[in-house]
Amino acid sequence: MSARNARTVGVGIAAGAVVGAVLLSALARRRSGAAGLPGVETAAHLDAARAFNRSSALLALSVLADSGIEHYRGSFANKAMYTPLISSLLSLAAGLHGGADSVARKHPVRNVVYLTAASAGIAGTGFHLYNITKRPGGISWHNLFYAAPIGAPMALLLSGALGAVAERLRDEPAVEPQLFGMQAGRALGLAAAAGLAGTVGEVALLHFRGAFQNPAMYAPVTAGPLACALLTHAALAAPRERWFTRVWLRITAALGFIGVGFHARGVARNQGGWRNWSQNVLNGPPLPAPPSFSALALAGLAALRLRETEK
Image 1 (cartoon, rainbow, N blue to C red):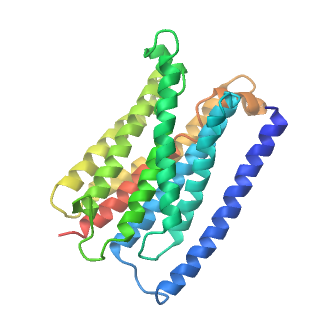
Image 2: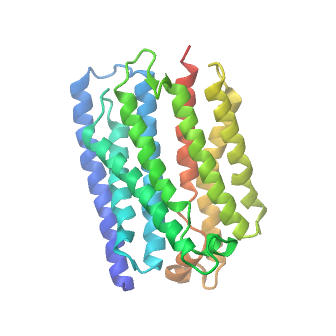
Image 3: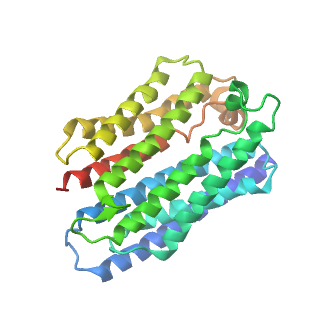
């Protein structure tokens, strides 16, 4: 694929995302207005569901940009490499739509989009695992470092899973909502904590590959596990206000956005810097990856708010 064609594809994807988001958000506002009177405060579980929709959208945006860059670098050698771009684009639109939708019932189209994205994430993990095992040496540090990243498709799975959970939560009653046989706040907290744990593992692997050459590379692999532990404890323990967990999750969310700046600096340090962006963005640290950290921390905050309202 030529650079010109790549730019055309990129512009097309971005334009499609913007147009789709605008149309779906407008539809959400119409449904919201039909559902109840303006100014009426929504239930806590609905607020949590909308927050999970938004977290799913942020994860999908990260996947869309990251898979677009990485699969372009792989020249889209396998036509299946277009799948995460399409799935993440749809998941992004569904997340933006759900984040603006205050209707307390599952949206069937969004639900299908989320389940499809989760399935694509599972299939992508299988493709990436096959890519690793078919190389000389099979599952080895070298192949884990330089073959298809084993954890990357999991971000698409998480985007779909967070969105699907949000849709299921919308169908629950406002009083004592439950998910998977437990209080909804507890279930959401455990789901967000599990996503954080997986993301920390992927970050640890890639930062280990980079030999932690910048001390800031230790930040996500220290803040992340603590955030995961605090959120798990908040989910399993008796409900009460947990200000320190809330503050730490906010710090973790901020680290994801700050990480984009550090990765941009990493790109600039390559030969030619940003003047040679078309080469260095492909070879430097992945710019779209850190916001996935933020998405899961924000989902954890939403789960924590709901957990604190439970008895």
